[in-house]
Length: 259
Ligand SMILES: C[S@@+](CC[C@H](N)C(=O)[O-])C[C@H]1O[C@@H](n2cnc3c(N)ncnc32)[C@H](O)[C@@H]1O
Image (cartoon, rainbow, N blue to C red; front, side):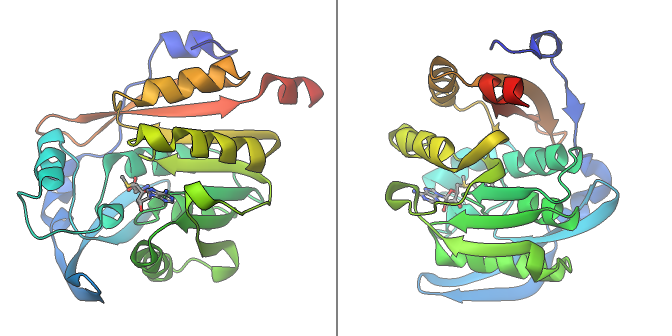
């Protein structure tokens, strides 16, 4: 990846986000909440996480932090089918930590494929105005529940149903963020078009991705189209074994010159 932050990239930042030893018992705590959906009842679990200077309570349908848990889930071996957007994915944790370290006060943020909504919720608590989007109603419902249970001012956090393949949002955003949204290569062109259309001049895209094999091609295409791409490498969880997540910060060099 080439960019002004090349030196930083050469020294990859390995950051342990989350020590599960002290949090493991709560990680699997059931919340007594059951979501009734058209595909059946979905029991929700709660995880409590320390991010930035406060603790967060996030409802989800199951944690998929380790690679094997993800394989089992995708093969449907674990339990009945659940919408994958409201599982707890490691990239959301990495993105939430990244956003907590940025100055997002007053910034307009678009969150793509919001899932349980943790990154957008953290950013909204820091004074950003966040629009969380997903193609699934049930996902946005859980996002909203999670925003409310973390006492986020609804004036800072809204949810819009929107599919990348039929995208109509015209507004420009200072930050466009997403975690684990690159798993389907057939959707990369739609996502690329959204970045072109909705990123404000001088804006930044931040995407967290667990090094899925097809994702590198997405970032290479952005570079070929004139974007700079910088990578931070994070690890999430401690066992068995911690999951590596890349957090990619994407900017347009011509925007920086104009600034
Ligand atoms: C792997 S999940 C990641 C969820 C969340 N960002 C996280 O990291 O926990 C991918 C998310 O992208 C959403 N998604 C997939 N295809 C989409 C599309 N075409 N338009 C909008 N959202 C989509 C899914 O509904 C899901 O919430």
